[in-house]
Length: 534
Image 1 (cartoon, rainbow, N blue to C red):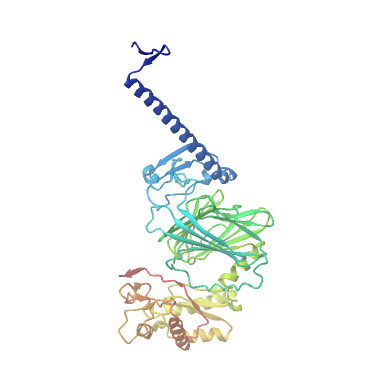
Image 2 (image 1 turned 60 degrees about the vertical axis):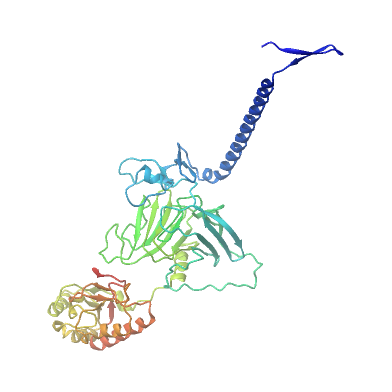
């Protein structure tokens, strides 16, 4: 295009004349260039901030020697979770029940990495940065730390608790208590055993508390580490580990442990030193003959660990709900329970006997048994009184030392508590004979009362019903099941009602006048039945 010029006659200077659209195009180009430079600068700034943030938050992972092998990105409508595939020992199961695939795993914002068939290593596991609670406030004093947390994202479990409180109680130099609970709505806590209330000395509030431990809290999430002062060993570390969940019917907490030398977690039949190879121990009282891999009569979620230094410590979860405790090779532990709260006690030992003493200060000491109970005992189900006497004569004739003879439910009428079968009408005479020669007798007595005897013929049921002492169903009527009673119905005294204690003492005392037994065999100290009538 040829340019036109205008001429200034006075100065004899020629100035090019530009078309209007040429000026506009030039201005637009400059604006676009400036906009692109601004975008590039903004992206560079955000990238620097992102790298700085991830560097700060990955320091703990580096301390734990995480070994990334590949990167997986999980896209969610609300946020993006970054997953690092780490060594197998660090994988905490994100899908403990049900059939899992990649889609169902990633719906939980967890990592998916298939392992070999039949492997115990989780295929679906929590990312290292998994969190669903943020810190609201933390206050510290001489004897405790109180932290509040707010739920930031829902889990796949129903009714996540919106606000949590974590209280750290520095109870003694060797005992620490950490309680995580809902501060808004009261949740169930076991009334027994009655944990002693520790009265702290408030006269020296400015004097530092002497203790054998240090506690460190996770940054901006639920988690903590307990460290032994004397050798700087971390005995329990739940920071950035596993997936902490606190919903109405599913509570989960994982932690790293110092060694694999763990003992306890009863009642289960196993080796003295527990198996840490992806082993699940179920806690739910179960009337069943002892067998490997099956939960037993009682639940004792307490363990003792021997550290590499030879020192020892113990941990007790004060929760009576059904639960699983999972041990894995790291070594690490995961608690999963379907209710209540997390109420953890830590005992610093340092010897195993010290740990046990500190533990029994909380749950109470066992009763000292009578001397005769430590002798030889004999019992068998399915005997008549004649067969019982034959067993006595045969055992004595063989010269076998013997201290106590037991009776199973055969002695009862219709297998009902506080009754005596017509076939065993002479049993009181046999017991008196045993007493004369220095022996003792024990009878079985399950805490289940027959509910289908003719009205007025069975006082234990009539008295308990009149006083309203039996466990009730949702309709307010006595909860009826079936145990050993031949007539088919069984109800259960509610021993959380103080009046039930007096009722049971009265029944036992009255029956002792008929049958002078020396001890009671309470085979089912829990509500146990073959089936329920609902």
